[in-house]
Image (cartoon, rainbow, N blue to C red):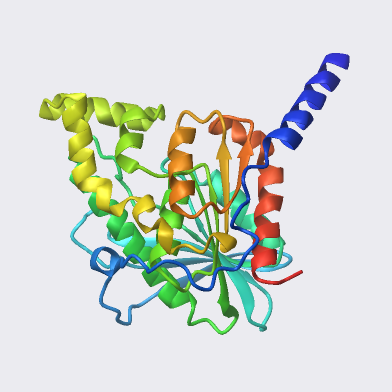
Length: 323
């Protein structure tokens, strides 16, 4: 029991002394930021009406869970013809703040569900999106990953088109939250779509091409090994291909569009999936928003999930002036 107590004390000390990091710009509302980097050439689309199927799947004490499905904007990819989202709708007729939740790269949707439920229990409408398949397909070149990322952003924007037509959604208080690859996409989506007012980005960063070369995430390791062997690429050639395919859609390119006062960034100091150097690159490009550095690795950050969730809700409540 004593040893457990010591471990708890050490973790608490690390949490207290290791979690604050340069909140320089985030206490100031910046009305006059830099000129916006236009994202419409890459992430624009023709707006039109589209059929949406809504299915009530569960009723909980405070909110309902509704499955949302509609056709993807681009229908030429046989594995990504449909967009699926889950709407955690508060039982209120009053306009209520909403949060978009984006998922991790692969695996189950457990982390995204946990955050969605926490936000919903805290009184927010939540729209949890499912990912497109095959972002890093072993049978396809890096340029296919580019296509999946661009099309993901487009369909996320179209989901927002549908959602903001709902009378119960407060269109002036829309936030976005993302974990790992979901954090990459969430920061990119907020930067190119002005309708999103606040963001919490977790376990993500910038510099896609470099991340592709150094990440220790199992799927990424396998992907770069297979692509190098399949196309006979050296490390330098692989990096050049990644730079050509992903450089102009990197979150760092569009990060200057963000208002740092409306962003919370959470990064593990010992992350080997998204190395801290990639996190710092994005943080610098985004104008130094509030950043909390947690004393964990990528996956071990789960041990601090309640701490992270509370910080996220506090951030949204502060930006939306809910307290």
